[in-house]
Length: 142
Image (cartoon, rainbow, N blue to C red; front, side, top):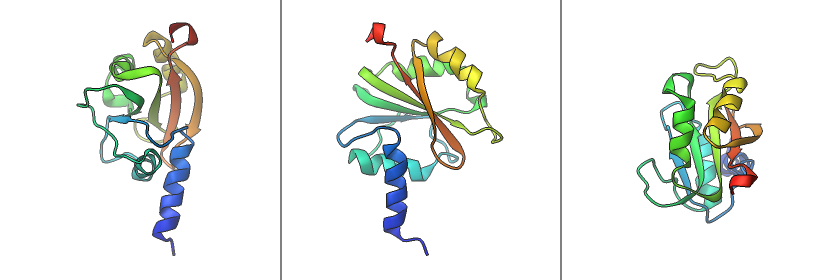
């Protein structure tokens, strides 16, 4: 039997892999019914607040963007995502893992990131169906 505490521990552990800490403002873009709710819950537990949505009009520390192959042009999506991002902020691009519907090839992310003014730093497993790619502004631009 899985307990609520065990679920919360799993959620917190997944969110901590994103390098999040209490007090950060995290904006979520691209939510749909297929997103990883355990990760979302963990993010809220770790930061001690709810995620803000796409309509939030202040500066954010982290953008969590859920992106699938049929969501449009990735460069445009990333450019939109960095609009509200604070200096030294981070974009976590969540994409379906290989073999899942909506998967995006790693090369496509590697091509899109610099065009949008971002640099890829790492990729993690963010759950059973999603992987996360950490994107930041290159140091010369910070």
